[in-house]
Image (tube, rainbow, N blue to C red; front, side, top):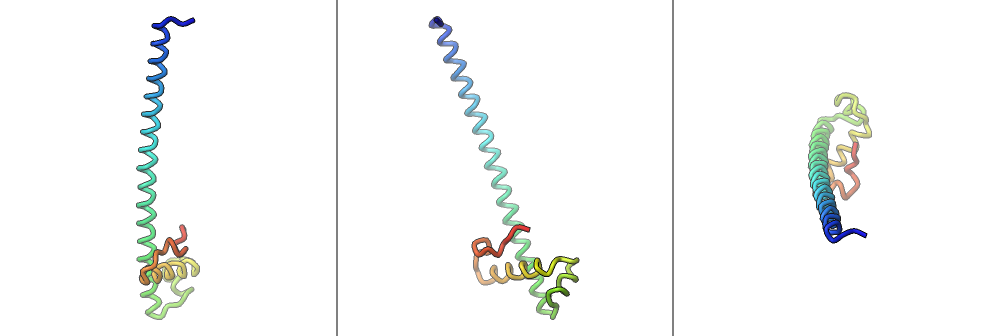
Length: 107
């Protein structure tokens, strides 16, 4: 059987281990939170860039360029991608949230 001093020392070790584990968990959570926030910012920037590209494609379309021709002029971007970006730009102009409408698909 452990003496009173040994019990106290063991309790102290357990308490210290728990404090260390809580601190490690808190640090990990801070790192996760920071990285998650950065991901959301980058995704927002990406969506903004895609909307801007879509607006420029709309301008090109306004100059008479059509699907495949638009794709060729834009470095071989697929016609499907051109269509997606143009749709994204149109939904943004209409004030709709492109992410909620399903128009913003990660590329």
